[in-house]
Amino acid sequence: MAAKVYEMTYEGVKKLQDELERRKTEVAADIAERLKEARSLGDLAENSEYDDAKNAQAENERRIMEIESILKNAQVIDEDNISKTKVTLGALVKIRDEETLEEQEYVLVGNKEEDIFNNRISSESPVGAAIIGRKKGEIVDVRAPAGILRYKILKISKPN
Image (cartoon, rainbow, N blue to C red):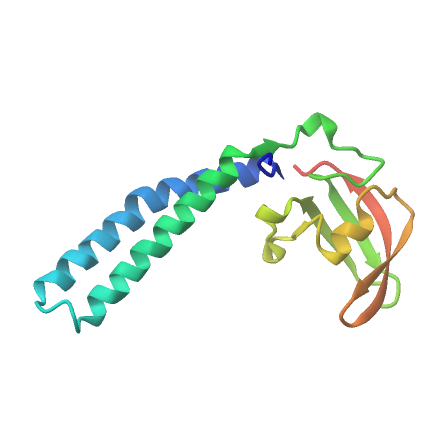
């Protein structure tokens, strides 16, 4: 079975590379220091500081392996392939809620770099799945937990 390919923006890949570097250096060093301090307290059988540090170490190692796997299988979205006429991965899309008339802008990204707090939505999210492949001026219905939401695509561009 072929490995899953993760389509990502250059910015998303860079962010993961930075996190990987930080986890391999700063985070690993902090955990090693915590383990050293916990060992100095004596009996490890009932040492919660030691257990916490070992759990943090395991979590850090798990995340390092996850990031390495994503990066190994990452395919960077070519800026030249981002359409200004059709919603594609990497596109900056301005949409308007047809009920509230509230406008929002999102960059459409792969699911490994979704960050709703920074207006980066996954192409697999309800809104992302509804708008991908659509054109400016189209109205799309999004099935959400709150019911059917209707959005109009106002603008499609490349992010700066």
